[in-house]
Image (cartoon, rainbow, N blue to C red):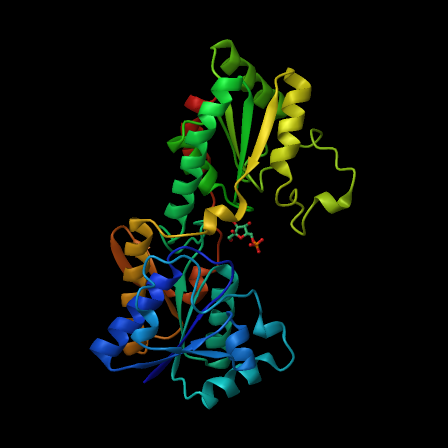
Length: 343
Ligand code: F6P
């Protein structure tokens, strides 16, 4: 059997660990051959391939990014996209395709399987940890660790200058990184996309922190929004297509508002793509490796239309359609727990 592999969407620490595990087990245990498709769905769409065998995956376990490259290309939106994908799979004699990706990449795999019979298996990835079918996605732990280390470092500058330091982390639709890194880093305010925040309340927390002779750290997810009336959007350009303040926007906006309202000096650090870069943590390597090992077994069993998922400590197979059906957002009760540390 020949297995095609692609990585789609934003890169994520652990992608190479999945690829390595699949190739190692696929070749050694099942006698499979592999074709790497480059740049996400653009690979099968345009016939862009890369050699994928045991020598090609040597030494890639600790490497961030993806040796296959990535893109957000959607073949379902391309002219004759499905036909071209099918032709290229036939041309390279690919019998099964493993798509490693987030909501969009897996959504394409689900439709290609359900509507057009393309034999796909999915592996979930996203630093955002917002896929409902799996307890965790790899990449998330690395992002949380990077953000936590940044918060630790910012505490010392905040204290030395008695400033407010606002840290903007990734998370457009779900605040998992903000919540976990905020708690682990001892933040005094954590703001998530799931719940609109009240600027007066945020400023109150900031002031009470100063009254206790500490300098506050405010962690804000990029998709967090103030409640209606607090945000004056002068330019429609400030909002993205979801109606959210654009990437790199909310942290700066918040620091300026806090400074204006409290009279305290405030600065912003936007962590951006640093959260997705570099070597994966041990947990992410472990999870990515297990996903790879189980995905190749799903291919062997010809259980197409499925995705591997973590449930507790078990790796299970779930329908691809379930994987993309619902966004996993932060439960209000979980967020309320963190409130003990605000202010
Ligand atoms: O989904 C992963 C993610 O890093 C999000 O946290 C972030 O909002 C988005 O991708 C950024 O996308 P891009 O790298 O295309 O700007």
